[in-house]
Length: 399
Ligand SMILES: *Cc1c(COP(=O)(O)O)cnc(C)c1O
Image (cartoon, rainbow, N blue to C red; front, side, top):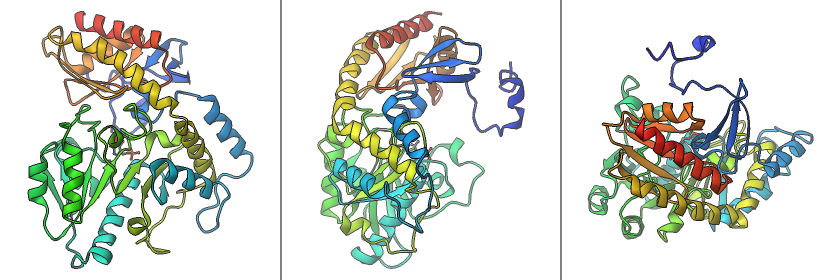
């Protein structure tokens, strides 16, 4: 059957930029979603970690509803009473001075690039127009034309040039290669502390500390794209915490919007983020009162440390269940907190086929890069439900 025939009939009006599993969700609660026919499924993707706190999280829904009745959008032309409290809480959570609020993850990445370049010219003294940024192979930072310019995934790039210059790609996980790519024009190193879309690639233990040291030695900003890895997923507030590293800029998104509205941010200290002057950067929706109210509640939840601890504990369950599958339909398992990439033995089928079998048994997961299944359930998932999902996964390897 072709991809088109497996789509619901009326999806013909959508651009074909996704190939979804043929399930049509009508509502959701916690780690569960229900389709239009009333079938329930466990959600093991959590919208690529944008739904870390579960579908319809009562605290987040209450915060959003309260704000809907007050005011939702005034633009940054005026101040709003939700934005400063949100910025202060998020900056405190990250141990930084300042927050630049945006909407989508790609906008946070673009904003981080602009900030790093402006810092390079105005503070570091790089000649105008010459700034370079070092990035890693296998990266995923979003879908804008500048961001796909430094992707090495042909699917993300092909057909979308001409590309934005100013980026150098080095192998992910090699501190030596990274150091060798830095010269006097380098303003920043931009990395995912764990690569999400690449298949939950956890770098060698000494890698991020080495990157931090190299950035310090060369007066280069370390920018951590924590859009998918941050805000509880890895069993810590930031994946960088687990490596004992503090970047100069955090790029946040996805879970920051509580699964309700798109909220992203660049978080950093005043000596870096302070380079932006009024009128140089902005967004009509960035920092709107509804986004700020939801984002503030997300930060309040993380401040307790409870989601992080839960992700860590459930992540141990996940790892204990997945590891023994190596050699039994699975060729590799990578786990960081409640987040796993599992490589499927081609003898069993493709990752897509495994996901289709799981869907038929009531569990939704998503393949990435052909042979990898990603597990990223909402952190609120019940332990018994996680076990059930893993039972279904094991059965799907035998099918
Ligand atoms: C999803 C993602 C992005 C892009 O976020 P969007 O909201 O889809 O623009 C950027 N970086 C990483 C690491 C991501 O996982």
